[in-house]
Length: 406
Image (cartoon, rainbow, N blue to C red; front, side, top):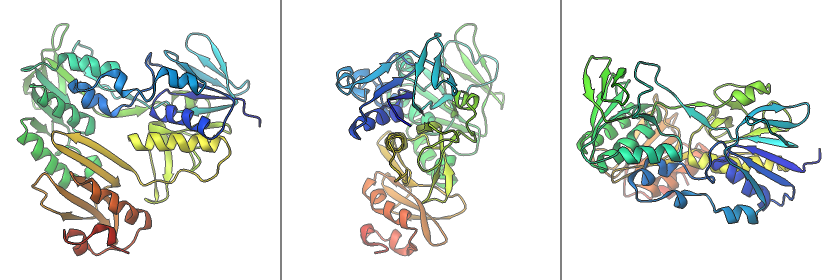
């Protein structure tokens, strides 16, 4: 099939990287980058950190300038929502009634924030953090002395809590489970990070969640499932995202915790690809399927999808990696935390600098470095190769991690 026009639905990190990669790989046809937001494509990690703290501005988080997009001859279509893929005509139907032709389509539709289904969730001051505008709206409310309730102890929730504390707010974090960050890091390491948040002044309440949110038009308080009333000038809800699969499902694509793709980012329908937060893809190193909401995954899978659309067959093969900045902690993780595995520490986990290794059957499934990015980089190759390692060597700080297993 001749490919003269590629439409990318989702002007986010995955979509923007795919558009740039198409040009870098020599594609000379038309590229339409369609996004629901009015802004130029931007990076999301600063939304809960630097942008929220006011140490950077919206222009600085743009992936590239409008002039650069023009030079690459990428047609940006902001404030546009695709509502249907007409497979018979090869056209996309837009919410405003317009249509866009496409020979191939890349879906980078991301996800929508999960909402609280309870009384008061619609009040002014109850917010979610997903977009640039969300971040700017929250920043306006992070005034010294403000009472902030954060719902959800994942990475978005904990990053917002850290930023709110740095802004001088009184912060309460509500986590429905018994420890924060347990889904990503496991319970033991999650407890380590929880203690650090408490030391920084966050009031962490576990095994509880909001039962209702009070206020007339603007939020004034939260009542928890333990019947506790907590004053709140702002409630930030960070309980994950729901993958945006409506468009894909309507088009008949296979759906299972996102859009199911193969190693080439191909969906179950010829000519339609998917990448980024919405794509459920196979990971050969971890031996399972994953849908990742990480910056690196969005960037590199978008690039891999672009190459696949142009005929490359090398596929997307990558050990997952992500980072989070909270207070003076840089948290980096490579691989996957297996809660049933063995946890080995390098350094003191009560300090602000250590490494944790997750092992199963003698091999490393994942590694987390707290202010130790070099350790994470050194161990990634061992996750790729599934080499059997000596836990004593991992724990011994006199041993060069680059030489373990070699």
